[in-house]
Length: 340
Image (cartoon, rainbow, N blue to C red; front, side, top):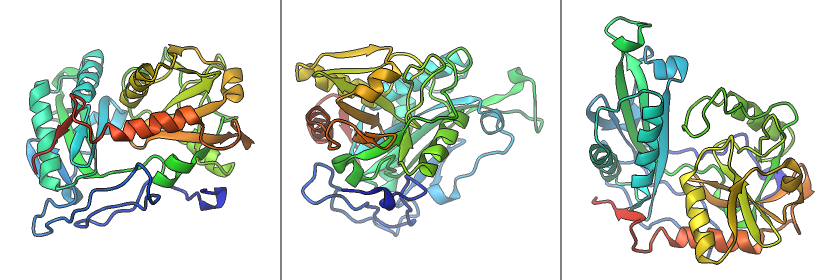
């Protein structure tokens, strides 16, 4: 099992351009990479970005410092993933992206189908069978540098496909990870930042991540101002108690992975509910799981240094996790094969 001493300062995996990227995975586990090699004669091998209408190698990707998406975090985004050459729930990700854009009065300037085709071409050109795929719509920039008139800004779309990034390394998805509830920061209120719009306003999440590292844990689970559970840095939280599953209905992103978890739970006959989840329920849970595109379903074995349940991944979490990864290869409307 991964110990606290194994936890580094970053959750992400270092990658080398032009190489087939694989993180170590536990032997015999449900998380296994494809067996393939990149054709490094292509400049796109290993990562591709689409910026201002052009495809380019990921290491050459640059955006304007005058884009208000950068200057004011005036944007929305989504992250989809590719596993074993199949892109998962791209339609759902695009629906959420476009819904967030409408709420922010952003215009991608393209249809859902057009965005999908660019996204899939980025993956195809990259040759990556396991990929982290980001789509971002920003307020953009104007003809005058630093333009402040919002009506004179041209909105921008940026898309890239890079090697799969892990919020929780594969070993922790199998054997479990650790979390704390931050003492010094709460999740931003829904009356200030709409939690249904995926955004880069991560001040509270970043502060919580640093506190978790300082306290010897992998990650953090934030509460809101009413002491109800919100979410973690980049993941939804699900609790299990007495055979029932619940996840916060407020101050939390409507996650695509969480949606999948709830569908799996329904298929398994598990009672699953979106509702307010109190801090008391969090600490008294039989099982805890973090669910995210960048890591699937990860058991949380301890909270604030105390064991959850018996300190091992719980049976419901394990069953849902294994089913989640099985969906990556199972023919269904949820996946679409990339044409490489």
